[in-house]
Image (cartoon, rainbow, N blue to C red; front, top):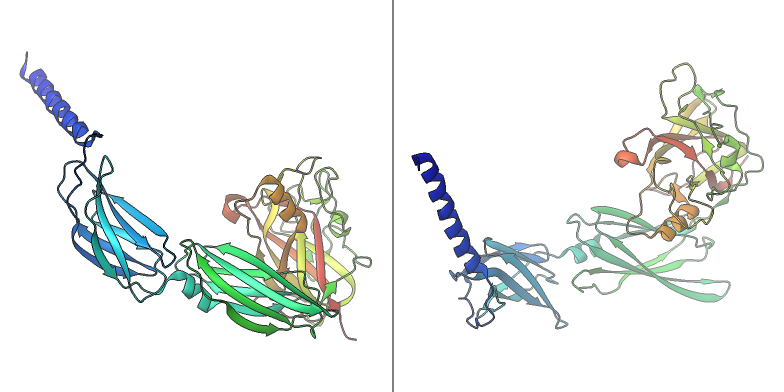
Length: 424
């Protein structure tokens, strides 16, 4: 045998022996009743609602993991674990900053636990109380708005209890919003109350570990009043006709028609009720692509606008039970709104809106959300009416595809506007 072959054979034998020993080290032995040694030298760094534990693991050959157990005020235990390779372990769910006792164990392959080592930690303020302190409630149009920040992006639930008296009848409701976004905005919609019928609001916030704040009274708020604007007198410019230098889009491609966008009939899959640019989004002298495109409406009179509701193309089949194209390609994911200042003959941008894609929904729930449409305020941060206008412009910027980066949106089913008739 030459030297090279001998060397490879010897190396293979050494690796095989090492592998067998490693396998033997981690082979469970049901007869093993001996717990591993204790975890020692525990220190910690405070986290928001938790702590990062640093430790020295025992030297037992069959050691598998290190576990930390925290029991909350309701007697419910929460266990956190890392492999024996780690030198730190994060624990969360601590409800306040007063301090908490955590039991730390070494665990072997059979499941034997060591004698616990107790460590007392004082965490930083937890996420759920930070969120609760940040919640702002403000009135909207036939609705009220909740804004909050969650810079730690932890999973929280925001419970909203609200009540009001309408036509002499007291009414109470509750709803819950789940979120892990750094900033979030939610609406309580369809409250058709006059400004003289206040709504009382209380909130509380819960985390995934069962910690919850007491009710926080947000007082009474008076909502703003608006109504749906009739489409009976709306007029659409012809495709490529320019209004204040901006051409009306071509929406009569394939099965689509521009007029379908203002007929109060939504696309339900079997009626093909939508507009379709057929990738002729940019019309006019500088036409060079599918997006952006502009849908322009002559409202037939002067209005102060408050909200817009857009309905997407569905085309999900005649049974109307599948998601179809809701929140997908060919639909508009980002758009801008403009009104025309006739004194200067210039379009004034009101807002840019991104339609968020719902998560965790069934096919039927997608249909429900899609048919309800997406509502946006003209001034989302400070709800109010626009200046009086007769001309409205919807500019489609991006589709949903590629995380809102692609120019593939060429359809829209319906536009509905809310507001009030302008004063003469």
